[in-house]
Length: 336
Image (tube, rainbow, N blue to C red):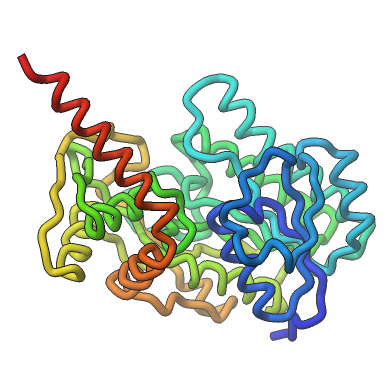
């Protein structure tokens, strides 16, 4: 592995959940970090580290902006974490997801061609595979069954083309269900932990869903391994744990951690195409070539996240109060 200290990295999506954790890991390893952020970006996840990074405002869907920033920064590494939030629910949201994932990736790769970038690490997604009834391995063909998965699969195909056609040193990390510090309060794991800490009800789907939950600190470590490890261009790695848990099991594990039951409401959350009986990574390739494997079992990761949320409760208590108000309003509406 190469020493990253003193190198320069440009991170897109550095204000997002995964990106903000990667930024902190890069800074802790002595990397000079530059961020490309939209001017309207909410930077709450950069609290405490924003003075330590250089922010360049602009949109990755604008090729001129991307070229200008890359020529100014001259990064050794590009870490591409930018992605649209959530699952698109309208044609406009689908178009935006495609622009950010596919066009944004294309702009970055085209601009990187002439700069001698040492490594381009792309944030992929397990949703590129679509649903299967067995552990997902990197050799599988891509057949996404959500638009978000489609947009990420398009970006992955662009990365593969540039790796083969131009020999760009590209690594694609296909992330599974990431959780941990700085995750959005309304996401599943924070919702469970908010209910454990401050009360409330956890809405579940009618049919239980399984996911491969991987702690964000382990995910950030995978990014650093991808930057520091010599790898064939175009390498793809699943970043998960190799073990899946149902949403109900996550609630049960959390209840054991706090020593009291957590209220759930089965059927209160709509079913999504990614809510399936099987969604788990095969991580043999990451162990073998990336020399990476997760260090947090689910109970350990949930405990660490819960303790972090208690220290940063100002971002999460408000969401708990809002959820409680919404539940009360819904209950009142059902009264005769």
